[in-house]
Amino acid sequence: MTLFKNWKYHVFTIIYLVSIIFFLLTFRKLVYKEIYGVAPNSVYLAEWFIVFFLLYIISNLIVFFTEWLSKKNVSLLKSVMIIGGFVLFLHVIFQIVLWPTLLYFNGLIMNIDFSKMDIKSEILEKRLVNYCYFLFITINWLVFIYAYKIYQSKQDELKQKLDTEKNLKEANLNTLKGQINPHFIFNSLNNIRGLVQENPAKSKEMITRISELLRSSLLSGKTNFVTLEQEVETVENFLEISKIQYEDRLHFQLDISPETKSIQIPPMILQMLVENAVKHGISVLKDGGEIDIKTFINNNNFHLVVKNTGSISKNESSTKIGLKNIEERLKLLFDDKATFKLSEANNEVTAEIIINQDHFTI
Image 1 (spheres, one colour):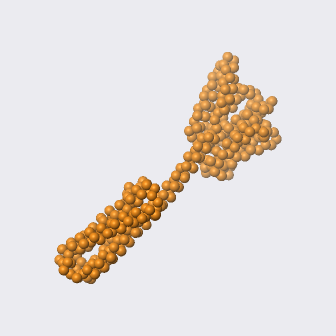
Image 2 (cartoon, rainbow, N blue to C red):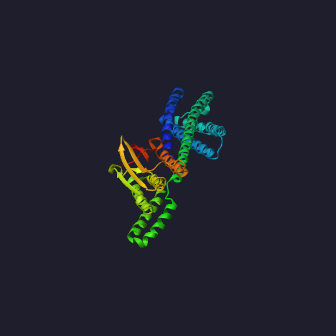
Image 3 (cartoon, rainbow, N blue to C red):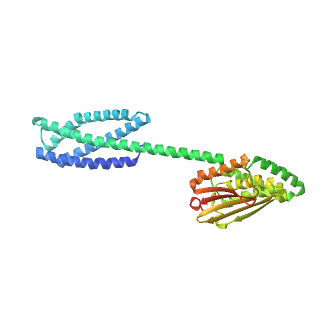
């Protein structure tokens, strides 16, 4: 919103002009009384209204030209020179046209013929005084306008910077969001095809699980957070489908604390940990192994732990990419309030995500 269209600006303008003109014309009324021996309220009010409307129009013209110049990308120095020249022109018109008119009507109201009085020096002195204090008002107003414009410009720059950072963050998050591996879907469908004749009920269940898994994957691209309960359902579908391929080689166990089920976590992040455990842990072991998933809250921190039989694949670049993906997503969403740890001990790999409880909703 421009300053000219901001109602707060007009309220502030009216209050400012009313107060400053009231003070200056009160002093002016005292001057009339001292010089001419008379200072009727009608003169005072007439000057007050005329000066108020004149300055209100001038202030709006200044704002209008200031904003027009800013849209034209005119430099600050050139803008000040143009506005300064415009103000000087208005003051010249002000002195040539307005004050003689005021003097004429003041004479009619006070029944004084100023043309027959030798008051040229007084009139000149008064005009100089008038010029000075109206110039003072205008300069103050210019300072206010340019201070506001500079502040507004800084706010716009900050908003634009924040919007750019937000858009970049969203773009990075969308890039990093986990998706179901197409090869996993292809292999699963092939495995289900073998079940159709052997176990129609089981194959029907697996098709349903695949559809649910694909739906979760599609929805993950539209949001930055899902409940832990939703994510666990996705992981269960993934593991049940994976068991078709690995049969008795894959076992899993869930230990989900009830108080953590409604916690908001990044979508597909648990699924990525579990997929990594299956691909680089269970699948490379002849006898397979077990995956344990556990969640709990301790010291105001949410813990998500995935353990699997096996060892860390040090030479697998895809493992490093997947884990780096998780770290970057946590950094973008939680800054330094979330950590990711990967460790190995006793032929068991542990991946743990810890998030400060203040950064999500329970």
